[in-house]
View 1 (cartoon, rainbow, N blue to C red):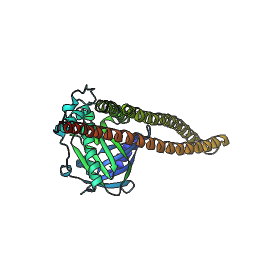
View 2 (cartoon, helix red, strand yellow):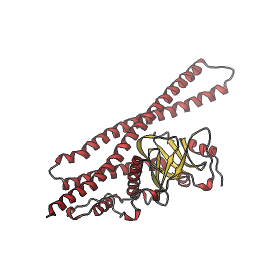
View 3 (tube, rainbow, N blue to C red):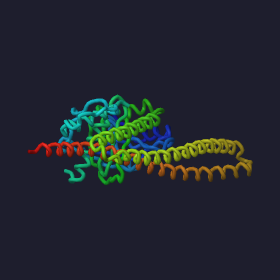
View 4 (cartoon, helix red, strand yellow):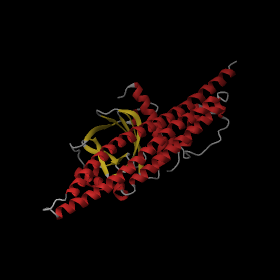
Length: 350
């Protein structure tokens, strides 16, 4: 089955979306990055191989190459994960936990519905672990999660397995994630897609923030005398709330601009129709109004583009913060538990 970029482009444009770029696997489109004019956010559409959709020179395209994650040292098998992400746990008897037990215990908190350089290898393993935890958030949904960092793309697939790719001529300054959906699901739910994606992202934000609090709770148990540790999630939340407020304000501005643009375009169409009906008599006032409308629309278009850039930048910073905080807090808990156990063993040395 073959599907053209033009047909996809027409479908997206008709629903107020646009294509940002393509990610190509063996010269066929694997992911399409799509931008939503109504929300100022982007998401990914997975194109199944049966559609044989080729890239298009009109859009920026990135070639991706699959990485065999089984060859990554110390990669955690997904079977180790259990299923109560987000449930608050009363952690007791932590002195008796081994490092492996502690890591598994921490990963219980991540199940809820709703050839490499050394540094790259470390970050890649950490990202794969993070996706293994986050996949439980979307295990019953038609939407999945994709994380970008540096020149890597790590994705939860439709069957909840994980794929990882390198991206040619691509480098992401921030660690960021996209919600992805497959083409068939998008076509069925196109009217609700943008709202679904916002709901899912907000839910994931909340889950990650809640687990940040849970991680700190464990740290307090490990080092009770270091009360300042409790301030960490408050500081992170304060920063995230600041970004949330800025994003919310920017989206309100965008909503006003979109509404005003729609009204002015409708008025412009009405004027054009009237001018066609009176081709011999050009009313000066109508021509003047049309000119003013076109100038205003041009100004609105410029403001929309600037607002899009602001929203994109704020979202990237927020997502980088929340993903990085989750990663660091999780890793710190595992490492600190080993330190505590090592001190206990030192006391037992005769």
